[in-house]
Structures are given as structure tokens and as C-alpha cells.
Length: 214
Image (cartoon, rainbow, N blue to C red; front, side, top):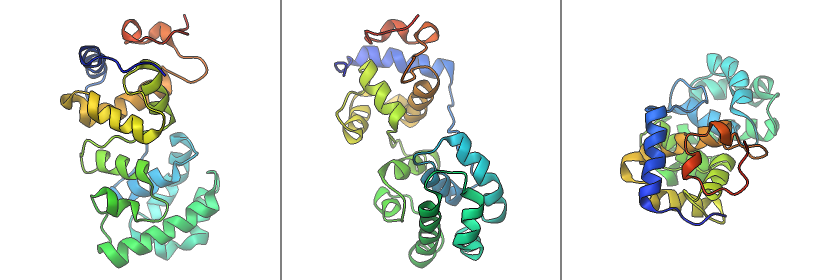
């Protein structure tokens, strides 16, 4: 775990991220807040690419809680059976759809607590939805962001909540809205786990990582 980088260095890092990609986007396909919740919930222990392949057909026939309930658990399974843990995920999709109808008039709530009350929705999923759909500067920490935060010193922490808080505390306010996406994309495609692409990294000179690759 690298030491926490000072504010001026973090500002330079995110200035470069912004210059390179002013409006970063999440890679999970969705058509509304509801399908975003479902897509993010399905993405646990799965790749965004794999989830997108499964949900394209699913969301064509079920893009609301009511339509998903009409499809039924067996119908959901048929669409998502290429995704890991698909049976349990299908159950949660049906349960969360029912809860949205029963308790939220079929609308996706915008608070973290309400989102986390939905079956299959944890803190990370709630933060993604808050950030991507409701434009709150919430920081969803996945394995890529956890690795990047600790490897670079942008946001070191022993667990995902600690990294989340470090991002909130140390990344300048002007970058908070997009910090999650800049970090996840950099971690996914450049600062990879086994062989980081340090040779093409735009923050190479600002990163204290000792085991850099060529």
C-alpha cells in the first residue's frame, strides 16, 4: 500500500484524467434507472461485457419492474444463464422488482439506504446508481479502484470502505463526479493487476508504484 499522495499531486493526476477523457462513461448498458440497477446487480463477479451480452435481450422484453415480474424467475434465468451465480441473481432481480413496486411505486429510489434495502443491491451497486443516474458524487469501489487507489496512493485503504472514504476526502471536489469512472477505466485497461501498462500510463511520472513495467 502506497502512502497517501499529497493534494497537489492528486490534482495533477485527475487533471490529466479529465484532459484525456472529459466525460467518462460506465460500460454497463442500460435504458433507464431500473435497468441500471439490474445491470449493476448482475455484474457482481462478472464482467461488464458478459453482463451486456446477457441483458440486451432481457431489457428488450423487461425494462420495468412490472415487465420483469411478468417474465418470471425462469424467464430471467433463460436470459442471464451465461452469467456467474445466475440462479441467485435471478431470484434477487425478481425480489427487488417486487419491492420496488410494493414500497417505491415502481420507481428507483435515489438514497443509498433505500437502494441498499433492495435484494441483491449492496453499497457498491447503490453508489454506482447514485453516481451514474442521479449524478451524486458517490464513489463505488470495485477491485480495479481498490488496486489503483492503493498502488498509486490516490486513495489507500485496507478495505473498500476505507478507499471510498479516501477518495471522498482527498480527491478535489471538481473531480468527484467522475472520479469513480476515471479510476475504474484506468484500473481496468492500464493499471491492470498482473501486468500494468506503465509504458503508456498518463500518470506514470506521478505514480510511486515500485514495480513498474516498461
